[in-house]
Length: 384
Ligand SMILES: *Cc1c(COP(=O)(O)O)cnc(C)c1O
Image 1 (cartoon, rainbow, N blue to C red):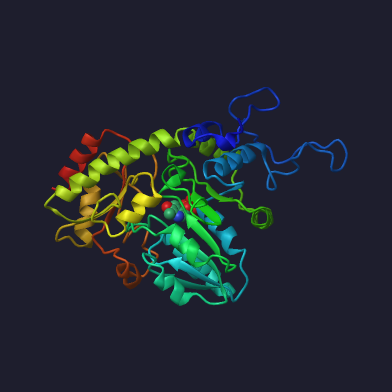
Image 2 (image 1 turned 45 degrees about the horizontal axis):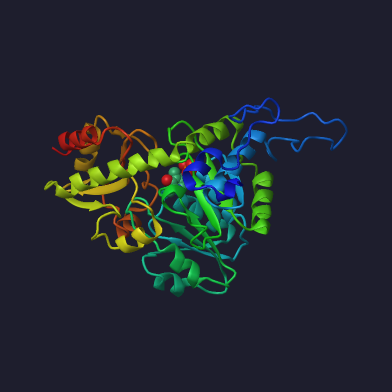
C-alpha cells in the first residue's frame, strides 16, 4: 500500500520514508556532507551540493509532504526563512493581505524587510471574509493566514478564504505552526501553501530551529525550490534529522497537548482571579464552530489576562512560575509561558498590538505534556 493511503498516525512514522539504500538504516543517516563524489562531471547519484539537496533533508521534506497531504515539501533554516521564500514569489507592486493578529516575526519581515522592496501588506481581521474582500484588487497576489492566531487564538475559516479567492490567481498560504497537521490540514481545505515553524510542534523538543513549506502544485514547488536553492536558507542535516524524529511522535504528543490544554483552559476559566481566557475549545469562543469544523481538537496554546493586572503584574506572574518555563517559543514537550507585550510581540507597536487584543497583561501558555495537575498547581501559586 502506498504511504499516501495511510492514515495520519501511520504517516507520521512511515510517510515518505524508506530504509536507507546503503545499509538499510531504519532512520535516515545524518549525511553531514557539503558535497558528493562524481564519477564524471554530472555523474552523481542525485546529490551534488548540500544547498541544492541533501539526503537527510530530502527524507524530512518527503515526511513533511506526507503528513500535510501535499506533494512537495521544502525544509528551511527557520520558519522565517520559509516565509521569506514565499514572499520572494512576488514582484514589487504586488499586494498581500495578511491576518492582523500574527506571529511578531512574520509581521516584522513583512513590514521591515519586504515593504521596502515595494511589496504592499494589508493587515486585517479575518474572522469574517468581508475585510479581505475590501482589500482585494487586481494587485493582490497572496493571502497570508495564521490560524489559530498568535497569541489571541482567533480562528480563521480557511475554506471560506479559499472560496473567496477561487479562480483569482491569488495564492493562499496558511501558517499551520499552532495547529499542526494532526489538528488541521490546510491543503485539504483549499490552501496552496502550508508553512511551518518546525521549531515548534513538529520538532517538538525545543532543540532545533527549522522551517517548512508544503505544496501540491508542481510548478509552485519548482518556483519555491528555485528560491530555496538560489537564496540558500536551507536546513542542515542534523536539524533535518531532529525534526524527522520529532514528527514520528507528533500524534501522541499532540493528543496529550490537547488533553492538558483543555484541563488548563478549564481551570483558568473557573479561576476568579482570571479575567479572560482565549482558547478555541470553549463553546462561547467567537469562532468555536469554525474551529470544530476545521480542527480535530483545540490544541495546547492558551492566552489569558489576569484580573486587574498591568504590564508589571503580568511579568511578576510569569516570573513566579516553576513548572512552566518563562521562554520564547512554544510547542515543545515542556510547558512554556510568555509575555507577548515584552517578548514575542515587542516588535509590534503598542497601538497596533492592542487593536488585536494583545494588551500589556496578556500571558501566553504553551501547555506541554507533563501531568496537568502539576501545571495547574503551578499556575495556582503564580496567579496567587
Ligand atoms: C515561531 C513562529 C514562526 C517563526 O518561525 P522560526 O522557526 O522561529 O523562524 C512563524 N509563525 C509562527 C506561528 C511561529 O510560532
